[in-house]
Amino acid sequence: MSQTGREIHIDVGENGIAAYVATPGSGQGPGVIVLQEWWGLVPQIRDVCDRLARAGFVALAPDLYHGESTTDPDVAGRLMMELEVERAGRDLEAAVDALRREPATTGSRVGCIGFCMGGQLALYAACRQPEIAAVVDCYGVHPKVSVDFSDCRAKVLGIFAENDEFISAEDVQHLREALEKAGVEAKIVVYEGVGHAFLNDARPEVYDAEKAALAWREIETFFEAELR
Image (tube, rainbow, N blue to C red; front, side, top):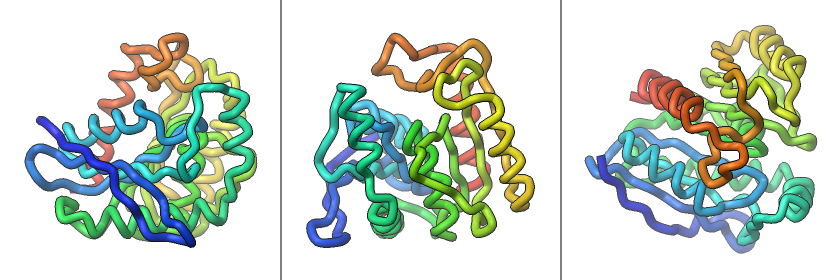
């Protein structure tokens, strides 16, 4: 299936935020919010939106760094730690509203997927916004973002890496236990032999095509089941 993409502006706060929206060639589909890694709203995140649109979803990626992005890990770390979590929460609320207003978006429930920093923010958003019915956390980590699952009504899919240098097996187990304690329906998948960011095809040093294909099949099946 083909797709089309465009840049939009979302009114929120003093100056608003930019976002990228991709729509399926079929014209309509369920909505999915896509949340960036610590690099910012880079071309690879737009590519994720395009991929989801080709799978039949309307995908929107908000620019949580308000115009900044980088390829330098040191700068990325600074941008991540300088992120104002409450402001990001307001930006995410506005992004969900904008996605639901898109003429191509069907249904009132939306999904949310995030990678690295964005994975943790996806969980955070799902606990604040009941419109989010399905959330995919791809190796989510952000030291400033805490999540209270008692308010989470979404179903959760966790995508993790066996050899993740940022997320230990104990961290994944703690997530499992927190979700179970809160009564959140969840599936956690740990992919063997890969490291952090193995889904990022713009970074050949970490990308694993075979495991990424398996993970994407899991992700798309999950969104199909929960949003259609």
